[in-house]
Image (cartoon, rainbow, N blue to C red):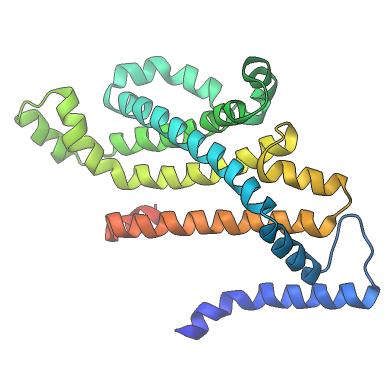
Length: 254
């Protein structure tokens, strides 16, 4: 059991050891690369002085706020499109025309309308998070077991009651998968916006380290973003398993 857990770590550890050995043998002096030991020291120092936690807080505030807003909008629209076929047909062209627009392409408009800061970043993240939740929700609603729909019809449930008591509970496992996907997108988009224009969070800290010619700190921040993303996904996977059990595993296989 322990060997199975350790085995996936062998390759990354080997790469780190090789990189450290190469850096020491060549006496690495670079504006873009640093030895793994130097990266670890920079990560510890930034955590100790509080700058890492402050930047992480700023990024996560924007990412989570945008995720909640975008997921809520995507859920409502996805349910409406999945339940009302005529509405789905009427909105199909609009959805497919807007969905491919890269979220970062909206930065100029967002900057003019909202300026720098949390609001602009949250708006961009929310736009990016709408689409996976919308698409997954619409598909999940359409694939609800027909017998459940027949039960709702036999009980003469109203459309609202049918959606709340029949459709949403049946589609919830797949909707949660969409939420997991949107959570990863939220973190990626938040950091990208910060790197591009917004002087907040981990993305801005990466740019500051790059401009100060501190490659160890820059790489340390990149490693930290990976750790945060891994921890976020692990937490959501654990919640999914706890909430849905075997149904979660079934949705993962689709």
